[in-house]
Amino acid sequence: MIPVVSRSEWRARERRREHLFQIVSALVVLLAITTLVVLLTKILLEGYARLNPQFFTSFPSRRAEQAGILPALVGSAYLLLLTAAIAIPIGVGAAIYLEEFAKHNWFTRLIEINITNLAGVPSVIYGLLGLQVFVRTLAMDRSLLAGACTMALLALPVIITAAREGLRVVPKSLRDGSLALGATQWQTVRHTVLPVAVPSVLTGVILSLSRVVGETAPLLVVGAVVYIGTLPESVFSKFTVLPVQVYNWTTRPQHAFQENAAGGIIVLLALLLTLNAVAIYMRNHFQKRLPI
Amino acid sequence: MKPRFGWLIVSCAAAALLTACGKQEGAQADNATAALSGKITIDGSSTVLPISEALAEEFQKKYPQVQVTVGKSGTGGGFKKFANGEIDITGASRPIREDEDALCQKNGIQYIEIPIAYDAMAVVVNPQNNWCDSLTVAELKKIWEPAAQGKIKNWSQVRAGFPNEPLVLFGAGTDSGTFDYFTAAIVGKEKASRGDYTGSEDDDILVQGVARTRGALGYFGLAYYENNQDKLKLVGVDNGNGPVKASRESVLDGTYQPLARPLFLYVNLRALERSEVAAFVQFALTEAGKLSDEVGYIGLPRQVYDLVKQRVEKRIPGSVFGAHGSQVGVKLEDLYKVEEASEKSAQ
Image (cartoon, rainbow over all chains, first blue to last red; front, side, top):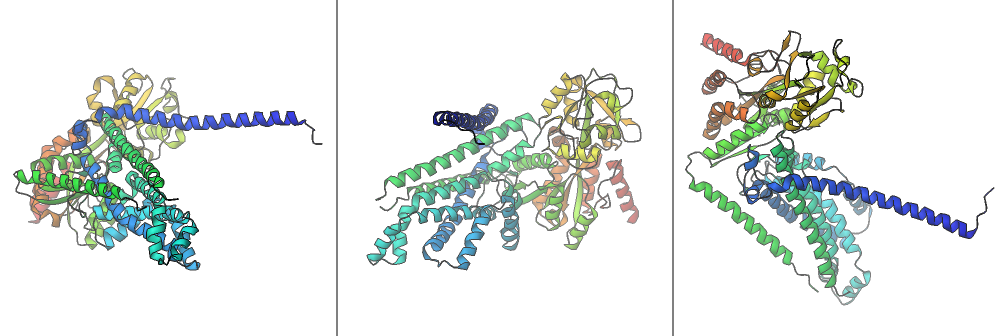
């Protein structure tokens, strides 16, 4: 028999449950934040002493105090720009095609499924692909260009998906209006749809690029070096990046190298936070300027 | 309603700035006096990496026009690239194996083997420990194998006659080459270890831990024991031929086994024809002893480097280990002397 409870009793019970759930949620959030704070504090305490100009302007060294992140920082910056130059046009172009031009048939659906699946492929697989296709078959050698091409592949699924989302939320009435005025489909996309979609497209692009900045595994496979005494001179130069440098330092037994690694992590974190801040800023900035 | 692409301009400016920085760096190198130029690509073992990196760093100071890069693909990965002719030099924490040698031959790649240093591990206990002077490899395995986790917790369990004293373990962190090597040499399988011990990449922490705990047992690079001899007690390792304590002598004469191994550089013979690579190899054979000691390994005796220098000058290819992989209890010096003698008699 179902026990009969009065309405007020039932409400009180539900309120207790709700209260309990709030406490549990708060605890979970607290746990996550505490972990983050502990990690950040540890890294900051360990690494802040290394953050002097010398650290940013020196090459790696076997003497931890003299070692710096210059080639790694420059390498990361080059890699980011090169990856963006390759991935953004292709990614946004693919999204525009799929969303605005392609007919919806089994073939485009197949492409869509593949793109979604690719977004979930472990990054080291992209590294192996890059090693075979770019480094060996296309003979790019273990160069910045090969690394950027590999990273572009890694970033593409996310960029395409984000860009399509951005294009999809543009109201159909805008397109119809433009087409009704006699604009061609390309003119509609170029002058009506894209400007409206730019904030969300850019957000997706920047978030996927910040993933590129933090990646280590595929670059190790493609052949980022762990010691280099010169800066990259061209896209065919050998290179190293911040995460690889940090990874190398963490495996060294001497404590001083761990401090260097912590310093590198702080720089990497600052870089990532800056990129994400730029993404947020741009989203807000462009959104305000829209006519709708 | 047109979005401003100011960010594009900013990123272009950043790119230009970076390029400018790169050029400036190149210009500085131009001013320095150096006859040699070119590129040397080194890859291979993560254990050899600190030595290769130190060599590259010093070499680069001497010849700023030469670009030396060092990768970290592991011994096996390094040999694979080496056999494909993708790199000039590869670092290895064991001699080349038969299959790797065959791959080199198939691709027409001849190499010179250069022993560069010794990697040795010390097994240590607390100085107050008066019961344990040596441990057999089997006892070490009993302590460190994965099955020991949560079970072997007292010295009395290690050997009958050891006192009832809690066993507190300190060892290399799981990311280090030391960990890989210790587990392979003692447990018999790389990375197979119990997990309930204090593991750290930082040898200072391990030294402090063992120095403060009466029932402690730990392992780390021999160089760290040498730097902290007053705080630690060295334990002999018995590989079936009686206990041997780790020291430069026992490591170099091959009696301290299995916790010592030679480290090598393999140089592509065709790359050696390039003057910058030849200069690097000469530089390595002159400086490796000093630099190895500095980064925590054991440099080889002068004679070994000299013997190898002669082999390099004569361009004698191949491995003195006959491409059979690791060999236990071999004195490097003898191996290279024997090779020398057989070369002479052949002439």
